[in-house]
Amino acid sequence: MKGIVKILLGILIALVSLLVVFVGIPLFLLNMKTTAPIEQYVEASETSFYTSFSQEL
Image 1: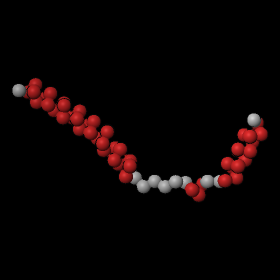
Image 2: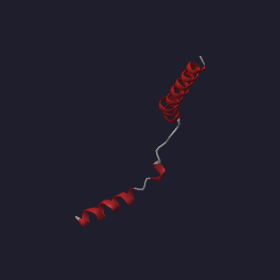
Image 3: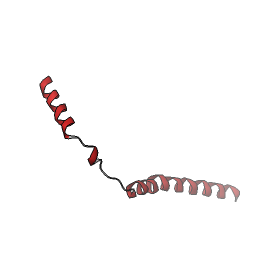
Image 4: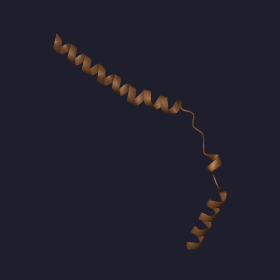
């Protein structure tokens, strides 16, 4: 009887762990508020990068 309880408890702990890893953590991460860093975008650096890149070709 004790062996069956240990096996069932082990299976239960494994299932709960897998459920937390594959369901809980992704739901938590998807629920976080994220914003794009628009204010960090500098168009001049992109232009200079592509200009120097095309000059190398």
